[in-house]
Length: 347
Image: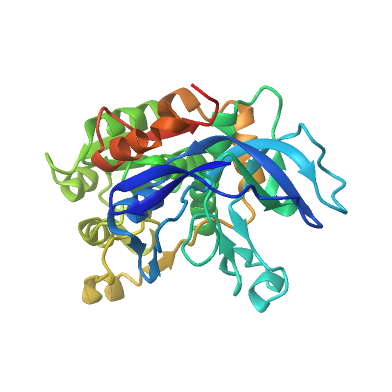
């Protein structure tokens, strides 16, 4: 089969690779129909690493995807060939202390698609996945919409983990796909006023259309001053969704005493820092968000309900042969890109 593989920094090629073979017990052989380009894919594309996870070339990335069941392994009773599925790219062991404690996303032996040393990614024609990682999607849901379920599940989990309450006033720092997923999810959970910041006006325009009460381009105005004008008592929760130190500093300033800072973004550096005196005096809770945990079905339900306007989120679509163009576009933040999808069908 064909796969698009990273071959070096900012380089990728379509290559012939072995077919996945037949699915084992409890597994599904899937045809990959659509793959979304994620920010973490771009980290690997541009730097070859995220933290201690370093790419050994060639390597296939991609983990946001939807597909069609081609064949089922022994013991699979809830799927059949032809079924359309959204896929959770995480493959936990279900045996370790983390899995048994309900934390499958921090499984001691977790394998995750497109992570070096764990599993090749989904940017290929076919792939084998555990049936437990696959979710049926409604007939009316497109594969592109289904591929949104994984990033949306992260935003849903971040809002859920923050224990957001009805009427909580919040800020989302970073209006990329994950920030918008937090926005959509927090609205569904009854958030009060929502303030969104970014450096790209087109993304702020989308956030406004999705329901943000105010937006701020941090290259033009001070997010802290703008939001404090609206929120003199400061905010209940701030979600850092861009992986930038300046955003973390803004979050600490914007939170009320007893507020929660949710660290969602993936930085390209190795260490965060914060003003210890301010964080201590406010008694802030600082909570890291690691992907998602048991939120895929909730994300699929949000999409199928019509709450999620995929036409706002999916801004670009590319063919499999033009995968590199998709990665370059997302890397460079060009042409108002928010979410780029790669359709695997032949051009």
